[in-house]
Length: 208
View 1 (tube, one colour):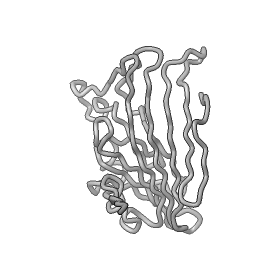
View 2: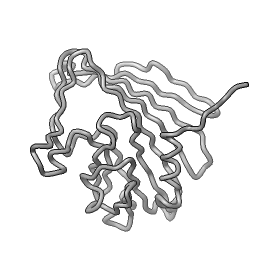
View 3: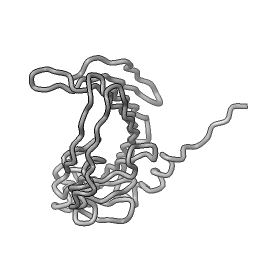
């Protein structure tokens, strides 16, 4: 449940939406808290860029994440016309195409592309090298779902010895960094691999 905004800022180059939230039971008991810091960058009209710094905080006790394919950290649903079952395409950093070659697989990034209102477009999610259990597994489906999942290794690998469950101890924090790239065309046209490299190796700025 949303608690408050710590920052809301617009601008010609970047906008910021920083929020704090509670994870609550149906009875209203707080299980943990999070911080979601979004930065939306102003790019040419054929692209958009969103960065997310996310923190899970075990603020009220231990938090257990079970091994499940449903445990997405950042998840996207695409427009139905983009579905891989309807002419769209999924592609990951290793060249895997569509659900049979991307679901339950680990990769640095994953991209979903298709045609919306006659325009070829795509959306990619980048997993940063600082993230826990990098590179993430992907829960990605031909029906339009794409999400990162670091807790489902036992399910994805069909091996209980690779149980991906994790307990975040009281007072501990877990930090993630993601980038979402909305681009023209498919992963090749959108230069997704190159832009992933820019994400993990940003240009250095020197002031003299």
